[in-house]
Image (cartoon, rainbow, N blue to C red; front, side, top):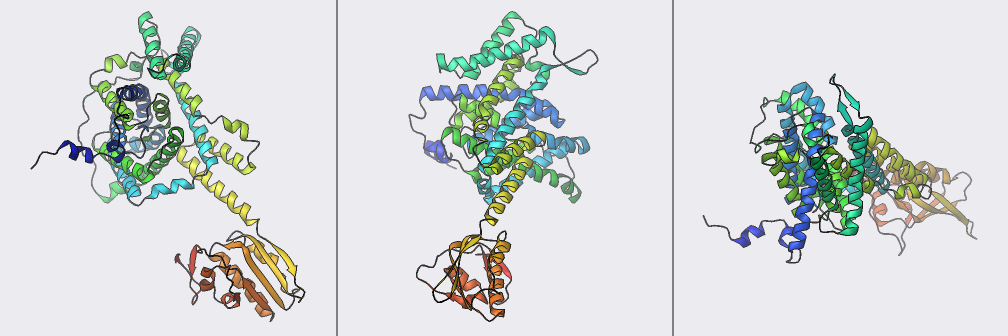
Length: 535
């Protein structure tokens, strides 16, 4: 067995790693990428711990997921600069499974979740993310910004003598707010002074130094839980390998896979808009699937892309895979050797970073354009924002897409109409305008008045388009009405496709050199009139 050469090893890397130029790998950029990764890793710790509590598992289960998912997606993900890890959207689904069946079933579910995401990548289902309209994207971003903001509120609560949670008050609250404000001020001012150090990292470092140096009594990372641990170990989930187990884990796996892919693919688009780069949706599905499959075998709770941490990375200068890779490795280092140091970081500093993420994530221009855009789009933005906050991202996106589709369908259904002329020879001409599809067939039928029309009628489809089988049937029905009255009907400017797919009305068509050439969305059997497959 021969030893692989450096060229062999490089050839196995993803294309965007292989094609990196010397300028791309300059010391300055390497430093920026690594520091961005360190900043992200620091912000990941309290998030992973908090989401572990939400799911009802040990904090290390969330930290291991953040490390493994972050590491694999950093190398194989669909877009450089994205950060993945344990997320709250997945945690809220997992808690019911953990409570009813235990953590081993969770690990099995995460493995199956990863397999389903791999299949989504193999069958290139990620391309359907393009069906998400821009108003839905804006609502998603705004809703997620609000969710990130609300998630930080738990850091302003303390445990009283009775063991119950209550809001901070007095000097404790003032000190916490002061440190949060100081962190935000540093992040805002730092780029005006120097870009040598990522502003969020500078904010965390300076505030941590102030707190530790003056011995201020404020909540710290260690107050959430200890993050000390060892390397994650390979572990086959201890569940019965039978149909009963599959019946338990399969519904959860489907929901988790869908939520994870939706959040990851939307984050893919958002990061792409910020960095001006292109990414592969199917490749991201594959990377998320591989990451979750591996995570389930190493005691992690699974995860997906994280828009908040991705924003931190991009704002800190992270543009390549090196920053995401560094974040994962730093997180592992925190667990193995630096837990005692990381646990001293004040939560106020991390809250301040996340508040700046909220400000940067929220699409503030929506407040200005709401009066200028169509009412339907404005309602979709508000609806998706509200559903994201009240329920979760996956439901919000599905609701937004459905409402947008219905709105589009209704708008186009009302566009169908006809300009009516009559020639000197007494021939009535209907010039159809607007798309003819399932939503506009009733309006199409109402255009015609067969009983009152002359003996010869021409229907011209030059400014219309036949979209589906319902449209073909509407033309057949209209032709039948005229034939039943013994009147002559001519159909003009229908596509070659319609010539083949129409049955009775096909005999009434008049060929023209300027007939349009497009494919009808379905194939209609001339002999049986039964809907067939895709055309």
